[in-house]
Every structure is written in C-alpha cells, then in structure tokens.
Length: 384
Image (tube, rainbow, N blue to C red; front, side, top):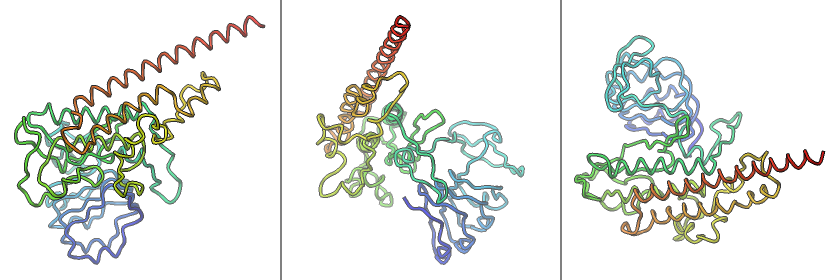
C-alpha cells in the first residue's frame, strides 16, 4: 500500500543487494541516482505505476540476476546490449507477435524492436490487473482519480470458482501435487473476460509424494511462507508445507471478497480475526458483514418495480441465502484444525451448486418481470 516516487536518496545505499517494491502504488520515473546501486542482484518494480524510459544504466549492473518491470507504464526501448547478457530472469511486457511460439513453459525465440533476438517465457497479459485492485481500488495518481471499479455478486462468485478450480488442479490433478503457499487477492490475475488466474508461484513447493498432505522443508533460508493474514500463523515457526495451508488462504480470500475487509485491518485485533468476524454473524446477521456494494447491486432496473428496488436495497432473500452458504464455506476453510477444513474438491462442488441456484433464480425473476411487463402493457392497451 506504498505510494509516491522513489526517493533519490535511495541511491546512497550503495551496498544494497536487493530492491523489491512490487505490488504497490509507486509512480514516476526511475531516478538516475539509482545508477550508484551497482551491487544490486535483484530489482523488482513490477505491479506499480512507473513511467518514463527504462534506464540505460541497468546495463552496467553486472551482478543483477533478476529484473522485473512488468505491469507498469514504461515507454521507449528495452536496453538489450548488456542487460540481457547478465540477467538470468527478466520480466517485461511485450508484444506476442514478436515471438516465434507461445508454449506455456518453453523458451520461444523473441525479437525486440531493434532486431535483437532473445529467449523468454511468454505468458498471457492480464488486462484487468489483479483482484486486490478491484476489491480495494485506490487512485494511482495525484491528478484524475481512477473510475470506481466494483465487482458484482456474480463476478465475485465466478472468480472464487476460478481460483478454487486452480487449487484443485494443483493439489489433486498434477503429476506431483503443488502447494502455492502465497494465495491472496494480489496474486489472482483477471483477464479481459474477468476470469481469475492464479499467479506468482515464487513460493510454491512440490509435495514429495502424491499421497502426502504435507512435507518438511529442509532449507532454513525459506523462512516465512506466504503473506501475513493469508498464511497459516504456524508457517512462520514450523517447516511443514501443506495443501491445507492453501485451503486456509483460499478461505481468507473468499471471506475478503464478500466482506471487502482485509484480514489485517485494525478491527481484527485482540483475538478477533476475519474467520471469527464472519462466523459470529452467521446466519441471521449476514447482512451486517457483507460488502454493501453487493446489497445495492441493481440489474435491469428498467424492468423492476419500486417495491423490488426497495427490497434489493436491503438484500434479496435469494442473494442472502447464497451469501450464507458462501460464508459457511469460507469459515470451514479457515478452521484452526486442518482436519476440520473442507477439501478443495468439495469447495468447487458446493460453489458450482450455489452458482446454479443463483442463475436459476435470476432466470425465474427475469421471466416473472417480463410477464408482469406484458400484462401491464396489455392492461394499458385495453384502457385506452
């Protein structure tokens, strides 16, 4: 949640080896004072709002091993004369038409605008950014505020299903089960059709055996797994990595999506957390915890009567019924005991049933409203 420009004084930290500023709201150009950071091994400025040219002085960073500049607004050419010779991993936004192939985990031959040839992992660019930006929109500039972007109820439900499907695949359908270890809204990317994609596998771990639910990591350098609020608290003190940990993170993400409350906000202290906050409101007080935007959602208002509008303001009974079921899944996924948490396959099945119930209700409501409108038209015609 940091914003502003990179301080020029940062250039005085000449012994700095790693500068990671990703997933914030920084803007402006990369200051020339950073040229003195010749010892940098990692420079990650991705997922911000930086602009201007990519500095040529990066070519002189002979120790640089990772350069990530994706999801920004840089202009001009990417320096290639020296920087790509020294860097083992670079992330930039490019044009797929310049690549000789698009296999997911291969290295297609790419050509930059100067005709230089290089190999790169190529992924689809997610035009709608990440889920966190939609749940908690903040203007990235000091000039014109960004247009308010909100997710309606069905969009949130669809995205939760997309993420659950991805986890089910990682846990149960890969040759070797994979634990993501850092599931959170900023790591859920949205394409142009608002389909959710799970990204950022920098902390992911393979399970040693397909039948195991957890394993012990032997590396002492791995440290804290995941992000505070989304990761299991015991991840910070133990060595066990578990698919149950991903289920817990998913449950927190689901609860955040429909309450629009981060698990780290100030109200969650003194032994109160997002899990208890939601659980304590179920089922009768669910209207008190749900994101008000959902309750005020209005669709096809031209065919709704004033009475229906008023009812929608305080929450459609069918919507509230679906919310109770969804919150119940989130609470089950975030139980303290791993054995009490839902299996992700059961989560997928239950969410699909909820969506089918919601869609059947909406179709029935539209049919009913259409019949009412036709009857009203006939009545007006007979009166004239």
